[in-house]
Image 1 (cartoon, helix red, strand yellow):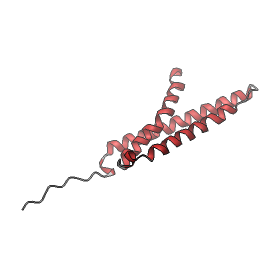
Image 2 (cartoon, helix red, strand yellow):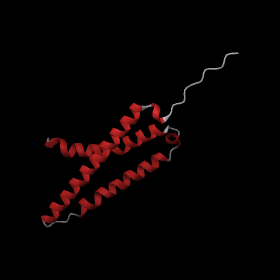
Image 3 (cartoon, rainbow, N blue to C red):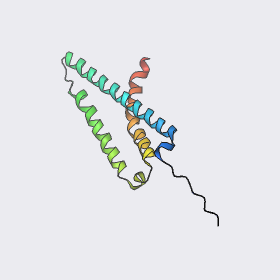
Image 4 (tube, rainbow, N blue to C red):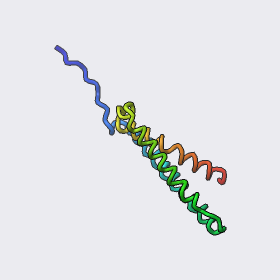
Length: 113
């Protein structure tokens, strides 16, 4: 009696391209967040030097970061998201988190190149 063929189990290390894409997206998100915060701090410094309030530039970025964290937390609690494999969940998180900062950094810096 022949044994039935087994289907291979997909582990996290079996998808190097997916892991590479996830790493690149997280690095792009981190760099664009640093650029956004640096530009906000620069604008706050220049507005304080001009004698106006730089407070909006210091309040808005942490508030936006808290909203994104709440959205990521809400998405991570959905049943469909929890059924995904770990590496796909990380990629989905990177895409969800990275859209705003990468888009903002592109809007802020690309016209100056």
